[in-house]
View 1: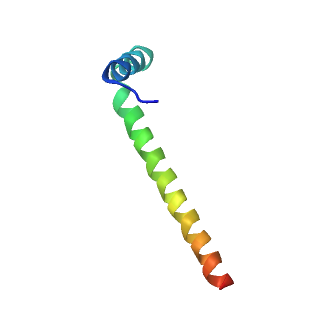
View 2: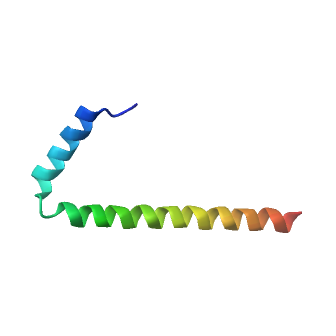
Length: 57
């Protein structure tokens, strides 16, 4: 399932209507932090997984 330009513009318009143009920067900042935390958590999980497999050898 791919999103085209039209779909992205509709989603953006809905977000602007729901939250208002002044809240968009705050929402994007929170979204960025969430993605960063998710990625660091995944990296941490991979490291612990590798550590467990190394100790079993």
